[in-house]
Length: 144
Image (cartoon, rainbow, N blue to C red; front, side, top):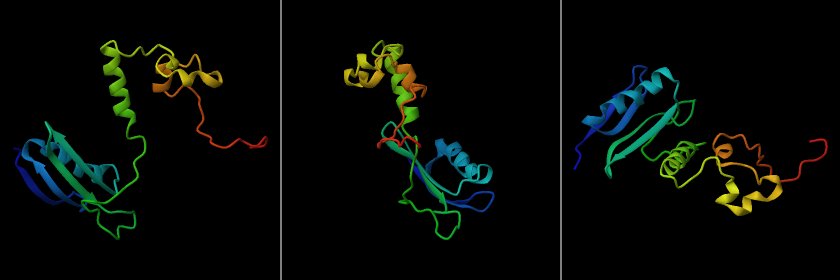
């Protein structure tokens, strides 16, 4: 079992940081704190597991730029594009194992995708965002 140390610190710019961190992962704590000093982070949290055990569980900063409320252990935020890296990693692992052909048409794996002129779209095109498929749900007006 990993021993976690309580964290109650402030970044160089005085932003409060709290949580727990295993001593072997203190560089994660340092990077987390630096994020507030150098990258203008307002509020954030970071929880990492290693071999099924939590080794880092940090939170710090504020819930808004107004800095009226501290970021808490259970503060909620909106995350965009969080799965892109994991999806790319999974796709490349599958490709390295011969289970996914990056140059194959997407329709080889998902036949229904081929409708509407997308029959030649490849897996690589999906991964590098060159498909050009808009996410518009309603018909665009002629002058739109």
